[in-house]
Image 1 (cartoon, one colour):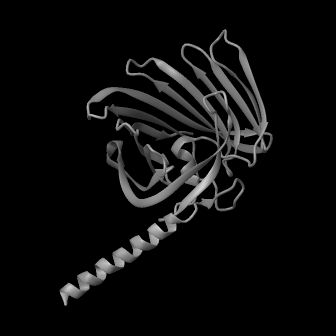
Image 2 (cartoon, rainbow, N blue to C red; image 1 turned 90 degrees about the vertical axis):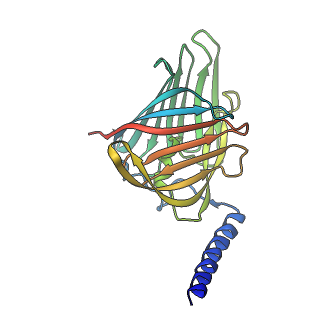
Image 3 (cartoon, rainbow, N blue to C red; image 1 turned 30 degrees about the vertical axis):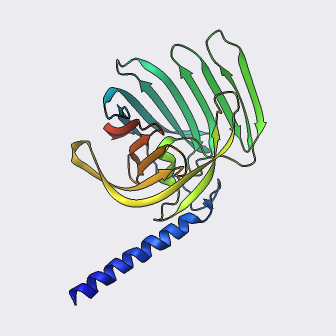
Amino acid sequence: MRYFRYRLMILAGLAVAASTNAAWAQAPEQLAVGEQRIDGTHIQPFEVVWRQHRFTDQGEEQASNRVVENVERVEREGETLLRFTQVWYDSLDAVLFTTVRVADQRTLAYRAFHTGGAPGGFGHLDFNGTHVSGVYVEAPEGPSRYFSLDLDDQVFASLGGLIYSALPLELGLEASFPAFGWGGTTNPKQKQQTYRVLQREKVTLPDSYEVDAVKLAINPNAASNLTFWVSREAPYFVRAESRSASGSLSVFEIEEWSVTP
């Protein structure tokens, strides 16, 4: 009797796996800015300090970097915005570069992007519906490249893993959404970002704080492997792993975090 019970459990598990694999074999579900089921109003202001652990393809650990992220809520002309500031530091704690991204809080549509590097160079973009315009300067004294182009769709802001906290997260879902890429600063354009919802897991943060998270494969058909762990609760994006096609690995873990006023 026990054998038949276990056999039924195994068959049930295989049936779930088969249905999930069948769903992933289909084209990703297309998401769009403005859908009612996409809502970032649960995101509260917060600050996170990440440590990027880096390993070679032979498993040797390299010098680690630090990343500080700060999310603020800003009111502008009757619109509630999220301002996402990210500062990267090298292993000696020198600033590598800073980026600031601004999004509509509810829809997470892109509003603005700004970056400044060390020792120089900067870029700025403004998004107005499907139109984007801006400038990129490779170095403080370098030539300015101006951009003005119309996109096919309104795009979601590039908020790293935070954006996924507001997207549909049903197990087995594979979805794609319009985003924006610099194209190496010479070919800025719209692109599609795809994610696959794998499973639910608990992630332990500093002070033994446990978060109920969802594990995602980002652009699952790419040569490199990028995995995010995200949650509906703060700090929303709680872990990341990135393995390159050559085998090197980066693991991002939270060292400190806090909800801010």
